[in-house]
Amino acid sequence: MAVSQLQLTNFRSYEDQALTLDPVITLVVGPNATGKTNLLEGLFVLATTRSFRAKDPELVRHGSDYYRITAELEAAELSLGYQITARGSEKRVRHDSTPKSLLEHLGSLRAVLFEPNDLLIIHGAPDRRRRYLDFILTQTDKRFVRTLAQYRRVLAQRNRLLADWHGNTSELFAWNVQLAELASEIDSQRRAVIAHITELASDLYADIAGSPAPLELAYRGVCDGDYPTQFMRLLENNLSRDIAAGFTT
Image (cartoon, one colour):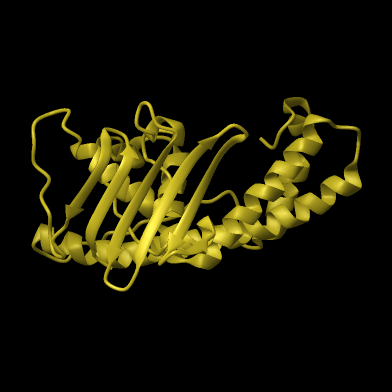
């Protein structure tokens, strides 16, 4: 859905700015340091709940203790607010004045970002490619969002156990089973995205090249075949290293 109106309040350099956006294309033009990237960042934060270049406290305009981003879409008004309080901070989302969780909100507004560091997706570390796939999935598949959140919670529990290791092998086994099952789901969904991208990229590459040319992307994970079983085996084989490190290596 296209954004027709955008309002930034205490966000970066904007104290209170309302903008009307064209439903097809809007060009943002201006001298350096006038807030062009801040405007785009606001849209990205509203879509994904986080910035691509800074932490939430850094997004709050100097002298304020909160920011709010509101957008009018074809069928709804989306609003995301971040507040710094005496007890810490909180982030809230509303759809037409109705409170929503951050997980419920993801996918309501989809954004595609391309910035210079994205070139590292090609030749940078593997974790960048995994994050890129996860970024696509979190905007397009609610099931993946829940799976990834569960995986991170289980991983955190396993890491806490390893950090204060007292030989609790039965408890560790329970976390291993959950981690392996969730990892298998994540792997499967990432592979499905790669297959879809390959299909699209093949046609686009053929158009650019001017003739049919084979192009294939492949996802090479840590396991092949029976993923949960192989993942469990890897966790067990790395146990001594994990205990020494105090976290899941």
